[in-house]
Amino acid sequence: MIKKYSVLICLILSLILIIKAAWTYPGGSLFDKNSIGFDWTKNFLSNLFASNAINGHENSGRIWATIGIAFYSLGYSIFFINMSKKIDSKPWNTILKMIGILNIILIFLIATPLHDLGTISIVFTLLGLFTITIFILKSKQQLLKLSCILCLLTYYCFFFVYGFGYLSLAVIMQKVYIISSMILILGLEYFTKSDDFKYSL
Image (tube, rainbow, N blue to C red; front, side, top):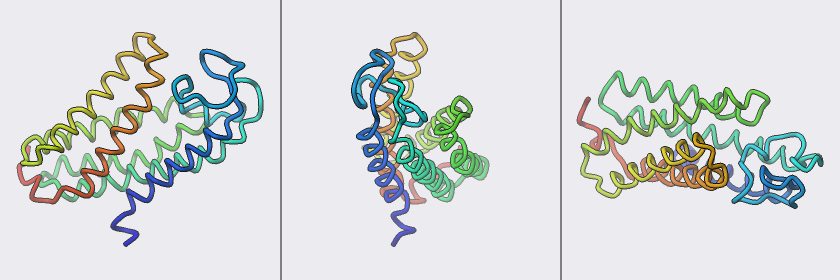
């Protein structure tokens, strides 16, 4: 039972712990260093992993955020490894398996001083989801087709607004693409079968 729902369990635990971390975050944001608490529309999630909050106070929520990102990385890694077993294309299922293995380390690095290196995990995750989307588009899973496309668009929108310096929008889009990818991953994990990926590239 635990193995079957391991991705769901990891993501739920991650979400609970991140919310707990946000609840105990002292304060300060990119836009107002004297603000109180964590504002989901003004704080990046990376603020939760700092030893000190932006307002200078010790960040008591850091431990919860660190454990939360550990479950998050584990959930995503299990997902990509599971999906690699469903795809009938040796080169591509090998790539998905490698993304799963790499992400268990890279995603967790986001919570460490090697944060910038950890953000590479976003690129690997996007590559994995893009690969799966190509196969889904050849399947009969109409709802998942739409979900895949919408999820990828949220990533691209984030990169666009962040890259052009629209940080107020980037803060919000960060949560949007994370939530959309979590929903998509759960959908792909539990509503696809090997037959959906019988078309090889």
